[in-house]
Image (cartoon, rainbow, N blue to C red; front, side, top):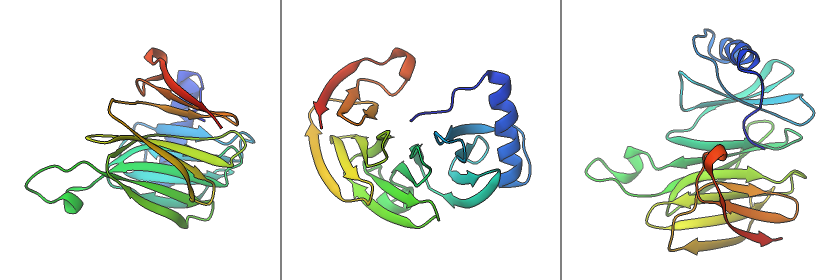
Length: 193
């Protein structure tokens, strides 16, 4: 789906409102993804980089913290959220950094249905428009693509010897990009589903 496209002023206003709703105070707003039917919003406040909240009709359904949060997406119908992270210092130890991360699948009520550790840092995620499938890219010494059904069952994965960036899952294709930044990225691979 991607970040909600609003005018700068509308985005700031809605972000500040959600930040007050989730954290009790506001200063900067944050990132917002809305479901297609506009009933659900996934909110990531700027001042609390590990907090993620699912909001329905301006009421917080759940609020969770994900250490080293990298990316997230919301199903078009608000039924689930996908989150990618990097490993925390507690997981890899204090002496040296190790690559790795987690892929989380969280349902509408806030239950974590999937917590899969990956050999590469979580990088990008995308949910198909029909909400049936989602994809995740990972980076690090092991660049990869993971493709799951909406219950968290691994359907397919592939490892690469070169870097991958963003991912987009459509109802028919998995599209990989060279970068995560949408305005400057280019397609580098795709598979027909």
